[in-house]
Amino acid sequence: IMISTARLDAIKGASRVQRGLFDYTANAQIGFSRNTSPNNTLNSYTTVPELYLPYTDSSNVNSQIGLTKLFTNGIAINLSAQHNTFNSNLLDAQGLMSQNTGLLTFQVVLPLLKNSGNAVSSNLRASEIEAQAAKDDLEFVVNEMVLNSALAYWDYLGKTKLLEIANN
Image (cartoon, rainbow, N blue to C red; front, side, top):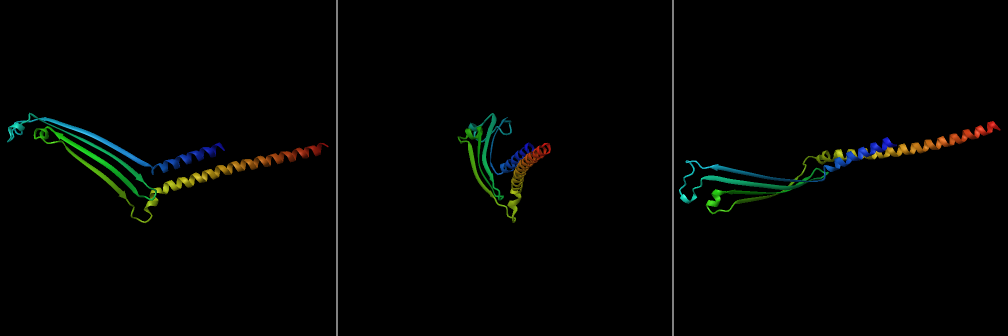
């Protein structure tokens, strides 16, 4: 019984792992870069003397967040948002604000081949069938042990009665 129960628990765990493929997944990223470089004589002269800068300093911040859901029929949905900010002392010197861009993406992936969604969920279905088979095996082992116990009891009772008859 313990072996069958352990087997059933292991198979149920494998089934949960397969079902986990269809959970929501979230992702997030953030990045920062900065570039500072001195201006040399080739690029330090501008047509507007007020814009002369002894160095160029620029920074970029990029962030992204997304959510993805895969369905058992093979359809996948993805929603993501991205933001990018660029700043430079060249922009500041010209009185310009930092540059910001945003992007919102919604994506749906549809399997076009006939029954191609089955390939996505076949492992899940197989593990669920295997879990049901393990449950049935455990039930069989328990019932078999109950039957064997009952047969052993009646065999014992019959032999004790025969012994009583033989002794009389």
